[in-house]
Length: 120
Image 1 (cartoon, helix red, strand yellow):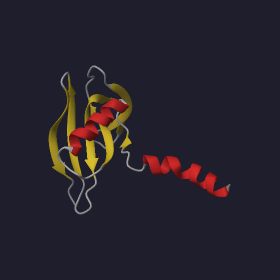
Image 2 (cartoon, rainbow, N blue to C red; image 1 turned 90 degrees about the vertical axis):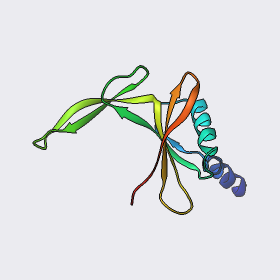
Image 3 (cartoon, rainbow, N blue to C red; image 1 turned 180 degrees about the vertical axis):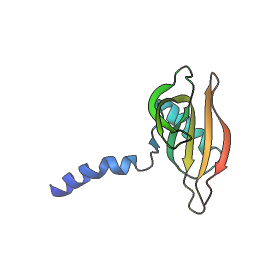
Image 4 (tube, helix red, strand yellow; image 1 turned 90 degrees about the horizontal axis):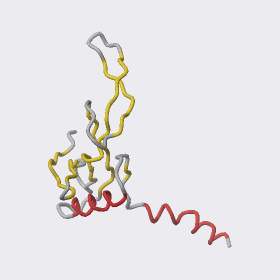
């Protein structure tokens, strides 16, 4: 009986171990498409999918409370907009530094528009 309880308790962890942490305001279908697109260019797993913040409102973006630092060092409240059509997907290679892929969604679907390696 104890074995069944232990297996049941850890089963969700095992099943979700390969899933990236998603903080972007996108659907599970978007996540699936992004994973397929990145998998076509690398075997490294995606660890994080995050939204891109913009200073101006874009249709579909979500307002987020934030701040910016003024020239005198004062923190000034502001609003940033997290875009649902523009995300970063970070991969975790077995060797070397993480690589980020910037993806943009259009009427035709998601497309990789930028690739950059994290710097040490």
